[in-house]
Image (cartoon, rainbow, N blue to C red; front, side, top):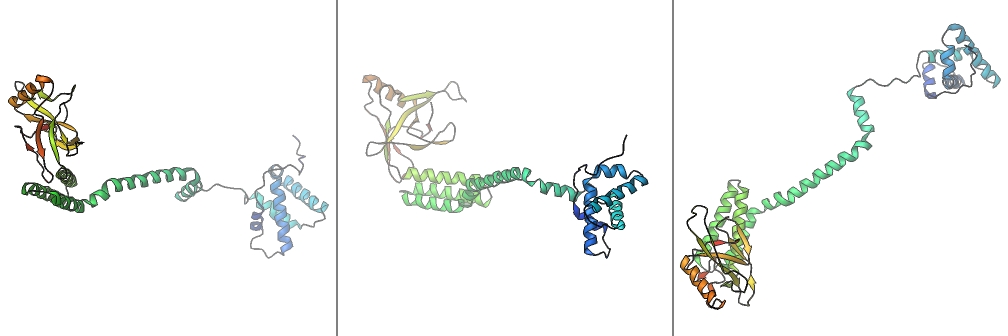
Length: 318
């Protein structure tokens, strides 16, 4: 294979700055330093030739001679020692890139360089976390922080509506229960007491007559067989609350079966069998219940005054 390789073979440049290392510590004039840098650049641009010519000493001398001819042709006088320094520097691999060893520092550097790739994901996750924290604070932390003041405020508003001692005693009991729960870090218990106060406040502000549901196609009463005694029946008359203007109200009612308070327009009041049958006979006569008033709830009172016998127990679904 021929070794006649031209000096014009192009290669990947590595950078001229390393030439300064070839003459570092010397006291050469500036012109000589510049020449040395140019020699190194020339060698780097012809890397394939350099690899071939540096295999043995004879070829290395040929390479130096060719470099001298290149510069002579350009009218540049390059001293032999400058050419030798450039060739020696290249042989020593001063200009060869060696990747840094794996270490914590290099890993951190790569992470930083690639921050554009993972940064948007981290930013998105952080954004979701911040949003979740804000929602949690607004939904739970902030309302809980206001519980002590809310208990006192709603209690005060309800007391202003209470029209008898029985109602006021009930309100005081709710307040004490809520404050005791707060002292024991029972947030759920305090919330329950607050809901009781709010329900009582609503009821105290209402005035209505209890009227038996008395419309064609609608039931006026239902009966249930209790789970604990399949041989018994619980009877309920269905009623609605009508205010002095004739408007049907929605009223908070405690369901005795579920122990949950629901705001409804119609509910069933528990009665004995005799009362249930009396209402049924009244309706069967002509399809109309003549005596359809079940009771009356005055403003400022928590419990209605009933015109018919009832335990006061109620259901909201049937």
